[in-house]
Image (cartoon, rainbow, N blue to C red; front, side):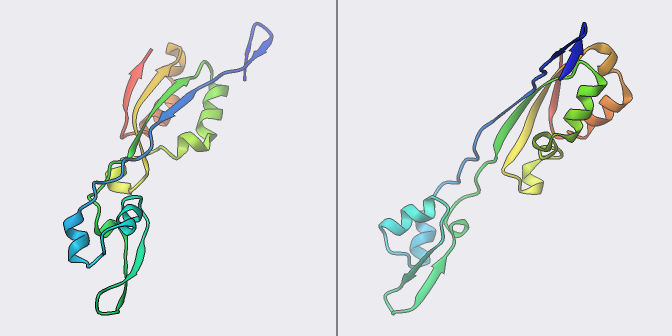
Length: 146
């Protein structure tokens, strides 16, 4: 919330994100591991582990990462409207935004990587050192200023 001309108004910022992309299934690896063709392949494609009995009667468990190529993380785009230092404090405490900090998912293994952060912020706030430090904490993202 933000006060303007004595009235309290609601302030909104947005996070848009996509789900992660699962890696491509490698049937050649599944065959090497002795997994019988059929429903088990589908379970592995969906990220599940499977247990099966091979032709020699031995029980084996295979995890999806053994037969899937590496996937790609989802991406996130954040639109921040920060008209005042009071709103900045709320943004700094927002768990959804904090979870995207340092989200270079290739290094951290995160499910979603922050790609772009769009700032709609008055010059006074944009030039404020506290705001600048907060923005720097999202170092993996590209920043666009309005």
